[in-house]
Image 1: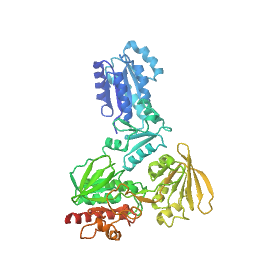
Image 2: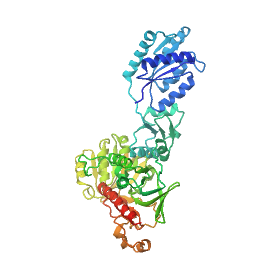
Image 3: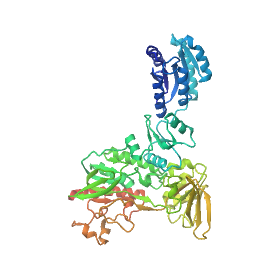
Length: 553
């Protein structure tokens, strides 16, 4: 944590040096002493300090300054740091102005020049004021701050990116948090500039893209090799496992992720059936451990970055990056996973990111405190989200078309949900309309058996309605099944066009696609088990086939 600041302002350089020297001698170990001869410069500096979450404990300024008088400076300064103590440095002839300032700016003390010896005339005064300030001081959050509207899709996108990348941040709702309005005011910004992202160095971005934020915080790794041995597209459990094994076995390894590492598993509040973690672990914790491991072993991560296509020439694979740029690799492992299917219901698209979310239970959970929230879906992701949201929401309602959860959810989750008083399962139910003004306010539900409809108040709706493979970007002639999952291994022989594509004497390896040297692992692959453990197993297995392929070429 940064030291609190004592800020001194005096237009006389000699006086300023003297007061700064005395303050540093007595308080330099516990406080940071800043000084300037310009009141205007001081105002600019304290705005930057506020943006960067530094805190001023005490202002000590001269009354007679050419740019503005000390009292006028304090009037402006206390709007930015209202809790700071205020001391006016005056000549004997200015004591009347100092006495008036006690009421005007709630002046704590005035010192008459000279203050020698400081042990008698300066330090006792400052000691009392700093002790008083410390008794009420609560340290500010030190890190990234996001200011915006709660029900803004762009604000949600930023929060979800930061949360998914395990980057601590403080959310300031412009409609509920007075600090949010203060940041706008001191930086001369307006609501039209939202969302805003403030960084630790005091700088900020207006309506930033995810790439802007990534570049600012140093998350955009650079491509460091002309040719990679393996490029992994997708950083879910399968991709992270492939990166760990590839790097550990000496392959030049690059992992490309379009959103944030972890995939859908990374957003899970609790994974309780993963081998070796009897108490369970969160998706965020699993992601943090895996990415740290991969990077320590030498893998590179490029994120956020989308891939638009893969091309082949002379045995090399060229990965075409969205927005320009190419990466050359000897092999590719596709681990892009799946996306939640869109809910094609009236009103849902209007409020996506403004009360309706696909996944993202951990990102928006606190905003649901003491509210009624709904979840669509009967799989493990929906169950884990319900358990997490139950800690915040008044009531959580799980909407499913079937009678119950037994056919689609693990029994341990069903047991937990059954013993959680504020989680309710609405069987044989569908959403037929989302209603609201600027955000979701109500849901209309229908019983699929009786056709009876009812409209309920709803603060949020989280959608987990099955998955579709993320393969739309893939233009290369890679064989997929009828649901667009990538086909691999011996199953490729069942496709009529396979022999037109595959020209090698051998059969494809178990996880190899119809294009030699390009592999698929995890949920994006046809026939995958859709479990974190199996995805990790396939990711690591893919690297063994990469080695086999490289040994043959």
